[in-house]
Amino acid sequence: MYFSKKTAKLMSLLAGTMLMGGVLAGCGGDNAASSDEIKIGANFEMTGNVANYGQATLDGLNLAVDEINAAGGINGKKLVIVSADNKSEAAEAVNAATKLISDDGVKVLVGPAVTANVIAESQVATDNKVPVIAPDATSPDVTVENGQVKPFIFRSCFIDPQQGTVMAKFASENLKAKTAVIYVDNSSDYSKSLGKVFKEEFEKAGGKVLMEEAFLAKDQDFKATLTSIKTANADVVFVPAYYEEVGKIVKQARELGITSPILGTDGWDDSKVADIAGVDALNNTYFSTHYSDKDESVKGFLEAFEKKYGHAPNVFAALGYDAGKLLADAIKRAGSDDSEKIRQAIEETKDLQVGTGIITMDPKTHNPIKQAVILQNKDGGRVMVAKIMPE
Image 1 (cartoon, rainbow, N blue to C red):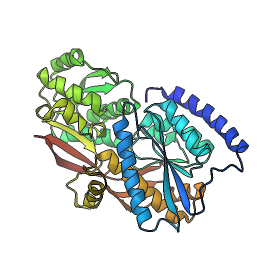
Image 2 (image 1 turned 90 degrees about the horizontal axis):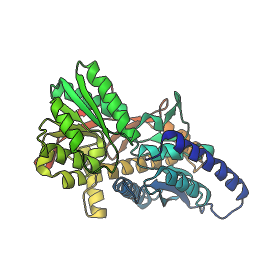
Image 3 (image 1 turned 30 degrees about the horizontal axis):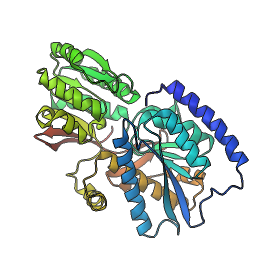
Image 4 (image 1 turned 180 degrees about the vertical axis):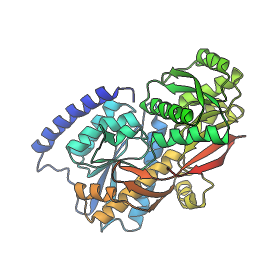
């Protein structure tokens, strides 16, 4: 997450080359799965700055696999998750993917959670023809490079342009905003990408962006920049960032007297935002995300998750569950644990019911076609204010 794309790709290329040598040298080793199981590599952020995202996504994936195995597995085989901690760092994501493929002999990878770590992992997976499903990574660069789709990289969530477009449309049409300030995390591709799309779409709709400001992950004091933002007196403030910084920004913005609506994206979807910002400060804030717990179609997943873990899932758990269901469906249709057949089956996914809705995979982009919802934080609860399918 803190490496540039160029650095992450260089590390990935080096690791991929080393891994290919290791795989060739290790032919005939003992890492093959037994004949009655299929190994799934889970490469997630279990420690580090975004551990909440990785651990929650893994919890959802585990639930999906438990349900599949309880129903008899797939084609007579049980799914076995082999997990590795990437420590919320791009370099460690490469190391984790290398270990899962070469040492553990996994047939497919799920994760990491955040965009930079998936991009770092991509070359290793591609070199070894192991398909990847990214449950949470929303940057377009995850599945497409230089205009070409990456053949082994897929995702099960919507992409940043959809979120940026949805929030710009919501600001213009629902909140009647004419002016905006954009405040992004300059160390995050996710945040910068969303800020760029929001600006394009907001201005296309006739709005004006008065100011663009930036911070860095792990910053603690935002008041100097927020004081400048206050002077702009914009109708809305757009902060597409992750929960730790979002909670602090919202809290400090309200303390400085910024009362305008503050908008965000699915990086806000964590209970820690309320813990950090406080309930009152979060009033009059809105964010796009993947589902609402008020939807009848997601209640089965919600009840199963609460029964297993004793608490309600967050959105990342839901997306991990979606990825598990998507993968299981693909393995079943592939009729084999052959990685290439699984890759092809993922690409051909159509009208599949998962935990948060219905997914059809776009073979040209490897992005799912699925709806987004907008939630309002209100008096300690969340209210769904819009549900939008991609155009």
